[in-house]
Image (cartoon, rainbow, N blue to C red; front, top):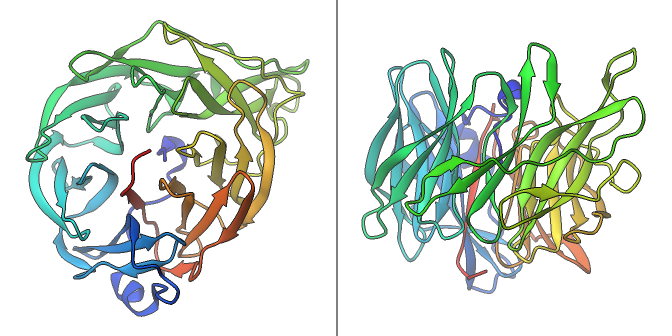
Length: 397
């Protein structure tokens, strides 16, 4: 998930009272074996709680013992893997990242805290490298430049050590969570260069150095071939476990009336050894996605198998066949037509999608040959003004 900075789609605030009375985890038909833990942050006033669920092999959810877990601070953006959760924790004066250790039955306990920013800095979009050795955030400084900051994770304690920041400039968009390619060396995200209302194509490529810090990369990319009179802007980037990146792109007309020309499309790129990206995508071989916003889709997530691409946004949730360097092809159409703010995969073909507009958490089982909504889905989690979900798979990729 990215935080498309110019169109904040959730505020990480929800009504815990409403959640407690309306969320009814499905229990019938569960196998008893958990394949993932799923967490939803819920905040009411100054009280925050985390609701935790165990997902079974069919995608059914059951409450983790002790859920909801009280005593949490203002939990915001999340990341998690290898037995730890990390969450932003904001006050009026500063922003922190809290570390939580997750027990063998899914119970989170706060074990560490680090200050990452002061006033007038918005911290969002936590993400990990593929091995979960390091944690990263995206920081928007309303008085200066924006940064990606890097932190090393102590595997035994969950504590974070600051490694340094990557300055990505002041006027840019959309920015947010980066996605690492399969070699775990290069990471990518859409970051167009903008001046007032004029923007130029941009995909930020960053390299992870030997210490885990993100540093600048000179490797670039070119936009897909556009039709006459149009140019493309990058909307979102997501990498697979090999050497390919899916990028949502938006055609913009250079001819009056100026503005978006049609729905966003989905391009595919190949990652080379120097981190550069090349593509054969063009306006005639890229599928469209119904999810159109100011920048485009809200989230683009490639499945662990690398064969499926989930796209979330204003129109709902869609899944496409991801064919590596070959053109992406349509698959499911809209699985759900509620606005979807974020989607995540576990390692057992389950796709989780959350909507702050309809106050529901959806669970689907999706493979390259079939798809269906999981038993008990959707789960009511509202009313909310925004929320976020995090998934910790329990099986290896």
